Image (cartoon, rainbow, N blue to C red):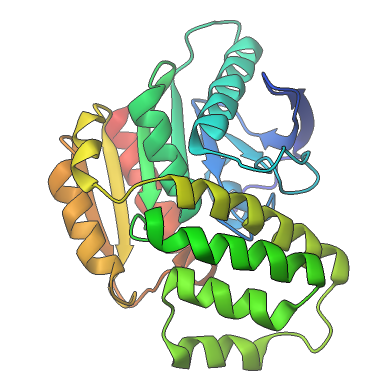
Length: 280
């Protein structure tokens, strides 16, 4: 695994939100987007494995510390603008205004990468996605987002957790397994940081749609990874997405679920590495 030292960076988005991140390595730039409840740590294990061949960029998305908090009512368009700002920053470090950035995302971060690939492909060379939860959007999420915001303000962690289970449709046995493995006293700072991020993400999901055919407009080479053990409706959603994307490489990760980026970092890193090498 690479041991290159990371350099911190901070920049300001077009609407004044601060974004904090770090980068390491040399070579073609790869920008990682984390999922809901994540942060700078989410892709670290995989980025470390790629930093001997690529320049890896990690960022805390808006709403997740140490990045700044946006106004209520975040939309995917706000974060697409953030991606555009990050791509410009990466290009500046390479001395060009036309960089060729590989964009990698997991879960909500993969949904964001799709939006960026559709709406702001300039400066992007490819997409690598792990299980964007495209089914968790639209009218079904609207009341859940409202209830979550109310419970979060009251500090009702049991209710917020139950609402997130409704959003993600995680089976009860998996929820129970995670609850049994969770620390007895979660760090309150990290818990609030994650909760705030989820609140903003739910706003964006509620305002989004579930039409998979729109992604036929993504003209970038796309790696789509999915775990063979992930619960429904993710498998059906990934098949529909693969059918819509015009330049897709679909790779099932055997024995993995929606948490493969944590449980199988070598497998995920190797899959991304192979895809990026083919782009080179």
